[in-house]
Length: 330
Ligand SMILES: *Cc1c(COP(=O)(O)O)cnc(C)c1O
Image (cartoon, rainbow, N blue to C red; front, side, top):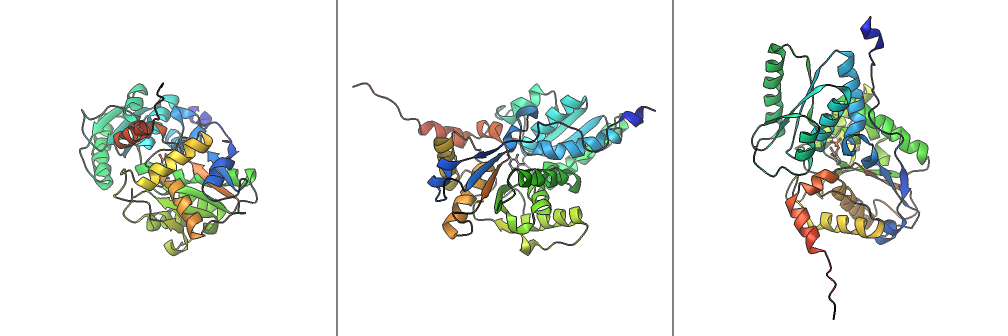
């Protein structure tokens, strides 16, 4: 029977393990010792330009295929990296992809929006709405697809189901194998699945989340995901989650994030993005200032990807361009 040959969970979509690289110049620039800081390069996961959603999509797509799905439906912000990587995963696996995105057609077609087009995804623009609203548009689309005899599966916002978070249970174990003596892994928190998987693998004391403002109640969402991974209740108060870098809200560039982007690029040639990884580093810098992270400890900054989103973020592009120093002859 054909189904005997169907992969169950997960399918391989990325390139593993991703590198864990030292960042001595960045470490010293932010007040740590040269050997204290390492970058886990989950921006180098391979598929579709890379990023953290690849680990989640391996589990989610594995199950979708096992269930006989032919279409992936998901939703996100206009510049969603998750949507772009779902488009790439669908292309790789021969599945149709429908993306329900916030915003309207006719806005800037740059960054992730352009990559969605290259990967052949169908986009439904939902207007300027919150992500709960995106999910309700997506469920109407699911019904229409079923009426047309498609076999769609819905992937929640950011791929942050308990199933998707298993990608970061594995990711956490991969980091631990590369650095058994680690003290803290720092990650940005968007939809919460990345932090939840890391907490399951490493314990809540070894994970520091930096909220990006994507969720109204991030600690509760992460704790619920941790609980469903463990099959046990989990308390939001036990999580180490910084909420001091949300600034004016998700997607809004702050001066601390711009400084983080500059210091990473100028010490290590490491490019971060303004929404997620720049906030993660800004949170790490604050944690060093507060003494929450100390010199002599082994700290890992999780680079979750997001480079296309930088090009889709006009404020960052123009602030970056202002940083160019011109050479004047004479
Ligand atoms: C989605 C995303 C995150 C956040 O991960 P969650 O699991 O949604 O919390 C971090 N960085 C980048 C680049 C992302 O695209």
